[in-house]
Amino acid sequence: MAVHRSRDADVNAVAGGYLRDLAFAQSSQQKMFGYKRAAAAILALDVPLTDLVGPDGALPRIPGIGPGSTRVIREILEMGESPSVEQAIEGSDRREDIERRRQLRRHFLSRAEVRRVLSDQSFAGPALQQYRGDLQMHSEWSDGNPTVQEIADACLQRGYQYAAVTDHSYGLKIAGGMSMAEAAEQRRAIDDVNARCGNQFRLLQGIEANIDAAGRLDLADDEAAVFDVVLAAPHSRLRKDEDQTDRMLAAVAHPAVRILAHPRGRITGSRAGVIANWDAVFASAAQHGVAIEIDGDPARQDLDHTLASRALQAGCLFALDSDAHTTTQLSYAETALAHARLAGIPAQRIVNCWPLDRLLAWLSRPSSERRA
Ligand SMILES: [Zn+2]
Image (cartoon, rainbow, N blue to C red; front, top):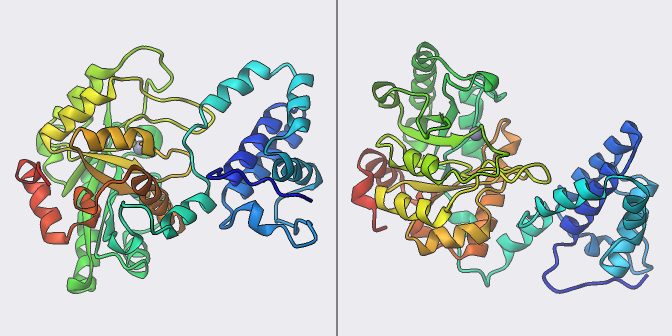
């Protein structure tokens, strides 16, 4: 078959999007889950579909992809679009919902595109080798799986010099938020990990505090002071049409906050997250020495490179984090790095690219690093 290759198109993201459209056009739950699984498999592929087509035009078998999905993929490779998915949408009564979901999939990168961006030397942003440690991840102490020792081992394997475990604080019950008593116990477990690692690696105790509707944190000031790094993130009011600039301005002005994590709280194809005057939020973050996070969870990608370049203009620092809940998800940091490269963020503006002593100095005195 003739392979359609439009320049700069993330073909796996296009295919994953059409397969998700097709999933939502199904009336059978079983078929819906099948197409969702197929979409997830394509979005997680390491190589673009265009590279998988053999010289005879044949597509190899891809695990998780059935004949219906293969037909869609062939259409996309030949035409750049899928008439059969459009037909299925027309035959369903879901056109409006599917169009809404399409809008909520903008500026998401597939895994293959992340890898391409990381290996393309023409980008000015940070290289994978410059990344020294990940500052958002979850352990068994809240809604993650791994122990803190497993996290340290996996981070060492990735070549990191440090990382921060950032479990949810007690206000977020749904995510198993840690009580302050549990946080004290976790601190002892982290001290043990650090004693075993010597000066090879340093595990920090962070916390992901929840930003309430008024922009307050679910931590008192003396409680926040217990942690090495405080992230603040919105987990509610993420589907509202109203402006929430004041809420986000209050959060970045909080003296304990060092990182504004997944600033919008968007989820691909599902919700847009917080609506705010982001340029105002970024300007205030830059003034307060608060780093803006690029969350690399493939479903979040928050900020994406388009908003990140506006934060760069505003003079912000950045944190590029995985938001991993398992040790294999630590690779999500690469998604964040790809967005930073697309936005052209210099490594010196990225706190994860700093040596540990500079990171610790910033954590204790953010204003001293304001003009990074
Ligand atoms: Zn979160």
